[in-house]
Picture 1: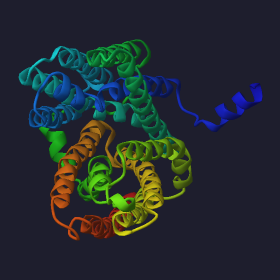
Picture 2: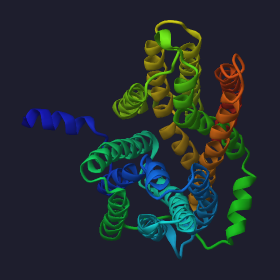
Picture 3: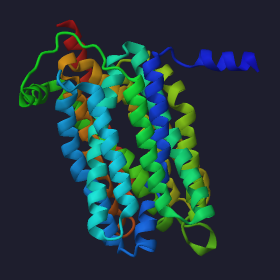
Picture 4: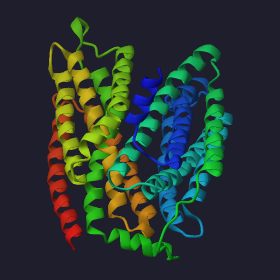
Length: 419
């Protein structure tokens, strides 16, 4: 047993104690989020009695406040007077309060308030936590650090979904999930307060907030990267929002011509998340030999293959389940080959004094992608066949555009190094 333990520990990346503490906190927070993410729509529509439209509008309101949270976080994180730790603490406190508001929600107004607070907290959170990882790591170590933190997020989310289902089955008390979620943020806050120190930054001087944003938005490499990053985040949104609907309505299984059963779709996405967890660190290690834009190009190739396999589930008369398993497996590798290198690329090109603003722009790409993705997918699936099936071919075509942009970005970054 000792040899097995030592072998496992030697396989883990060599990261600072503070990074491991942050990873543990993100695991706990992920579990709390998993408790509520998939069960909130069910609870507020079936138990509270709100319409699906009201629930959708309320949940979507968090994206709006998240944009403002990211904008504020970018400036606070870079401020010598506020910094990374205080911003991260603020994010967890706001999120804890938001979960308690959601736990008490009995009407549309309270639900909106809770989601606005939660979205704002999430917006504060991402630039701060990504900046801390960037400050405490360099080079290959940074890639692996981002990979492991994403691994903690995914593992925590999956555990939260499983434990949340067990808790609902045992107690039928949905509000308890939100209370546990709030508690997880309180614990995370305590971990940050006691164990995370404000990273040391050199040559950081107070600057007006708008000056930092103006400088970042004039960075050609950052803007080129942002354009392709919006495409990647739109693809991830398709996986989470559009593919389940496509499997339900456009895949003909057996003589019934009905789509996959809900339990089959659940099993498929469990497989997808499991592969994301298993391959996150190994893929990051394999791709560290490539430049950032090259690693993202590898991810783009996996997106092409994965979307092609998903298209086959609707076009084939047999082997649809095999195509779905293959497609979601390949898309899991596409995602894990994207996430650590995207954050690491931004951290590399950002001046240390503006790292928070740069990573805030990176995070805003996710907000834009998650706005475009569900809308685009829903619009396409409302079209009759074969136009609905053409969604995947259209996405494959955009991946071609992404690859061209990445080649241009690679040349920009190489020229930047030689300057």
